[in-house]
Image (cartoon, rainbow, N blue to C red; front, side, top):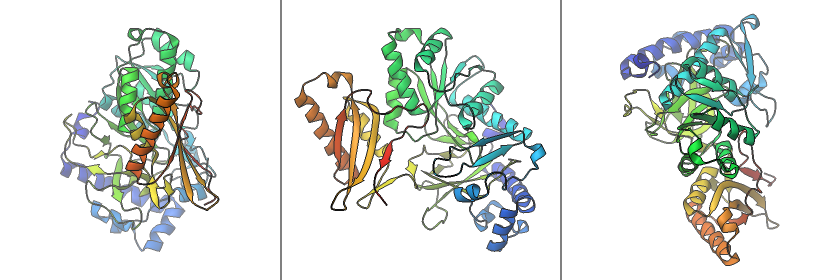
Length: 432
């Protein structure tokens, strides 16, 4: 256990720490960041009004547009001379979001990732291959610094070049793999095609994050890579990877709540929801210096559990991400998440975990949803009638799950686009 004293505190002790840190970060944001001072004033709230965690609801939310509108550095609470590194989001929907780090922030980040890895069962005896992208994306460097702080041996290969990934995995005796779930599935294909005997690989733990994935995908990856697949969570706006992580019990991600204060709200009413109810995940950073955020709306759907875990940690646990409020498809009034479809596909068999949801609008202005999924090699070489039967079976199962009619198209193995980062699961061709 990386930090046993903090990670096993009773709820009252944790709340005391959170309260003092919340009061401090609220005051610093008010004094150092004009945006927050204006937002607080417009809400009629002053730092002196924040006396306990119950007062958190008095504070305004921070949204992605707030960060984007103040690009690049206007939300920083530290002077530029103290900023030692900048990371940024991909900016696929507009300008990127830039986040700065002081020396203390880098140390905090390394500690949180080290705690995440320890939580997952990684030790200083492990060799970890980091196949997240390095650069402005936080995944690669985030895992890198945390793994080094833990004392593990790091193979900083980044993404891509799957043949080399597989070779080094075998030659170096890699025991831990860190990458996106979709890239993990991609590597599993390459390992199988390489002809290298399964027993030549030493993998035992996988640290997968940066995109939602279903329990079915987890079991698929565990089976093909012969490891324990652990979910890690983070986002650029909060810190990067290391906000929360599963332990081997796989019963929720332990939130490092001494640094990140979580809430669950109703995404429509913005009201807090009780423990155990599904809603939008909101975070307040408690200890970041350069770019603290107050009540950041992640758009991720989850729920929180406060009872202690069987591993001994008393940290609040968040359920693995169930979807997002802003990337779900609405098809004929029904909310559709890729993870719902993924779970059905992987329960059926005869198909591989590579698929796309394509939304379009017919000439009658009706929404259509086509699901393209790759056949397994065995099914591809089977009779046409068997392929048609599987297609019909998948369509019926998905329609039963979603409650709407869909089209299902089985395609040849390895024909859908592959990604070294986040998989592009949804293609929306409608003009909404």
